[in-house]
Image: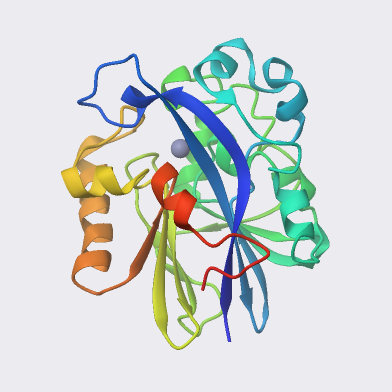
Length: 259
Ligand SMILES: [Zn+2]
């Protein structure tokens, strides 16, 4: 039976206007960075690796001055992926697959700790991230220190069923970035869980149909958001939003299972 665990990969204080394009700047919001451990009978899958732990002690050194002031880190010392896996009695070498939803710093910060895992990234995402090294518009880490390591990256194109049994499926949700992906998990007795990552930051984005400021292609992102809403409202899936502070408060976190 497949189970899912929610891990805290960091806490970030930011301006609310970054999340909702129709909100004026000036209000702050503290949001979780969430990683998920999926325990499948044939191996462990980790969705996203959070903010790099070095950023907790030295945010400017790790993230650069501009990013460190836009995104103020509020993480406790153990709000990083390796400590969180330890809550489940796991080490990085126990992870068969790492899935990066996309290559923003708060989703692939800990990639370097997984040299023995296969890392699944959309081809379009990796190509864009490598092309725009230094491109501020894309908000990838200019120095690429988060993802640019000699790791076992496996590039995928579109939907991808990780174990071939429909239990862990990568769903292309392009728009936030060129190759963003979400994850569908069929856990327990067939309960469907959709982990949106940054294709939908919060429930409010989905309910009000409002996009964030950080995006690559608004039309593409709107289509992805509509598809995720369809999973929730028509297919009855449980949706876990990428950075929703309200939902995070109510979420069962590791070491307890979410589903
Ligand atoms: Zn992002």
